[in-house]
Image 1 (cartoon, rainbow, N blue to C red):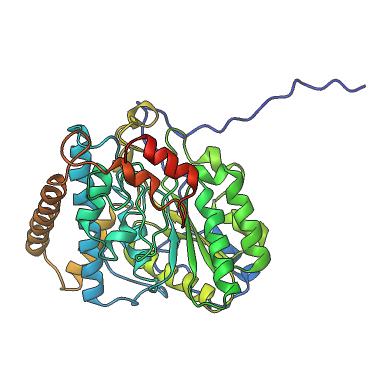
Image 2: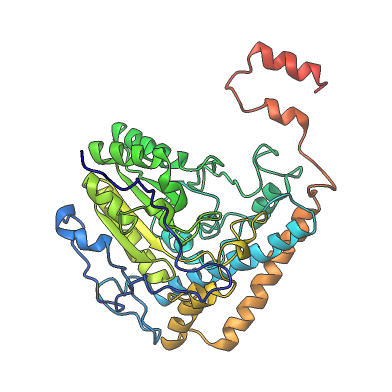
Length: 410
């Protein structure tokens, strides 16, 4: 018999630990405008290279270049800038509220605002998103009331979900925002199932699934790709690769696939990577994939390459697992600053107007916060009625719920 060395187990390690020098040398960034834009009906096999590159539109001078550019007017870009600024201001106020004990939990979007804000503008009314907890931009870009979002975060008497969801787990059928699930990856198979149902009914609405890089390690992710590819479901499947799960770097979930987008290739699904901090690029890729789904050409997998600047949530301390200065070294920059620079280069914006807009948006967010807090916060003011937990569960309330409601006196 041949003697073999003992078996060993490979555990991926991040490039740097806390206290070290940030290192993004493994992130290969192509020149803006250099990645080709294939026809919408391109065969997945012919565009395999898009799963390993990064589609970019904005160059370092703030100019929009290449085949994915020139899809949005100045007014549309200004709306997008305001949506991202609103989301950032909203985050700051709600994070402060959590620190003040007005809510139990909050999750920021800092650095990722372009992903959801831009994607929403490529969708049509009636399309359904199955989001994670970091896609509030889908609501803000669709003019969902800030007060309603805050009421849900505070779980107060005006909470549209009546206190039955954790903070930031929003839901709005009207706005195509399916109830967020705290159980990660479930939304992927739900999105594929919803899309299949839409096709079975000969509808025209498509579905959009969202997942983080860490949750792609869940079995639901792979099951969704099986069904989406087999039945050519009209769905766009997004992976938001912000480099970190709650405490582990993205290499743990990615394994040996090279990129997250490459996971789609084994299923015959067109797979693209996009600069998630480039509003114009996200919109262009979203529109390409959405048109593909709408034309019965099947699913598309998109990896949004971005960076989570803040903590995973208010219960997380990122200093325990990554260098404090790592966000400053992220090579794709800040999505708000990049879009602002582009609009200034186009002559449609200025530093003065930007500062004025920041002040106006902050005033709007603070006014919404004051209104929401009049209806209660976590530990003060109005709360949802206990009666509400019995309502809306069944179309017709069964006898056992009638008895339980009677027992608690409501």
